[in-house]
Image (cartoon, rainbow, N blue to C red):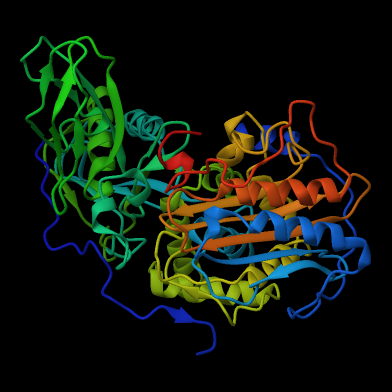
Length: 545
């Protein structure tokens, strides 16, 4: 079977002005790990103004001031809020009305909108539909793999679909195998996502038909494995799932034992070719990296074709892109797959800060609410959903759902408003269960916070969403009190130099936890100003958590 690229498919959306307002098993583990503390009833939130802490909270305010007087924040702009969502009392505020880039804190707005608009029990359907052939009952014409926007669709799911096609009695596909991703539009990337990020998993192309890799469900990628050979020989490259779909340009060599490692794995912009350059020392361990593919629907079709072959179904035509014709009489549905419910999908999405999941949810919201699976329609519906739960979106600017865009804007006050309003929804527990838990070692519980705030008053208590881009970092979430009630907090930092000031954010989270009466672990050492901080992206994007 040959693979025919789809001509003229748009990779990036046309440049547009961001719209400001008014101008599976892991779920049980995540739930079990978070303490279920009683919450105070919600009152009407106070207006976000210069509200100063009362006498009993002066110590916390002074402590936060000291934490923020850190060399890592020199020249930076920050918004910091600590608030009682039950009474509206502001315990600390600084720069809470300043519009700042949120990085992956934007995902909280997307998750909340998805839960409100789609519902926590929303599922995604992937179908296999046949056009009848003219031969025996075991023969069909074209066969369509119809994507339903499932962020967790795996190669195992495709194998099950292929097995079901074979079990239906089909032995021969006379026509083509068509990958149908028409549930969403053909725009693959947001206009201001950085072009140099395109080879990396956190900037994968967005499609309604895409395959999720591994237990963290990275979509639109393949795992490339590079191994050294004998000194002076080319390295060995395995393209993983994309073998036979993506091209390979391998000019990398095996260097002398103990020599420097200069290997680079790239996918040049506008190509579907994995390029491997540099040198890997003889005797070195294999190197494995995730890299994106061009047109994820094509990779899904490729894997499905391989699965059909393994189950004895012969495809005589080519792998093409195409939409199921609407004028055909009752095409035969041969197989189908129903995804996990949205509440369960949110766990890997939020714990590992998965950008592609965010964008697929935005487009699904648009498709369900407006009939169009586009960023424009989806983001408009995100805003409407947030309005519906009472969030004041006046200071928000939406350009994507993940926070990878540098055109998004939030304020710490609006983040606090979101966290407060979520508490009064029917799906509040689903939202909370998706947030990373400080210091929890199980990655499906701790997520991007698994290596932060361990052995502190915040460990196992603080739940929050992280976010980091170059020069942008944030941490926002909840800290429950031992005797009931809780505080919400938001720390958003922009414009700093070097690594993310995660030590500052963590120190504030620990201060809030201690203020509420949580005790630090015996192994805790105090955080010091200038202590080494985080990197320039989310740790889950670089495989360090």
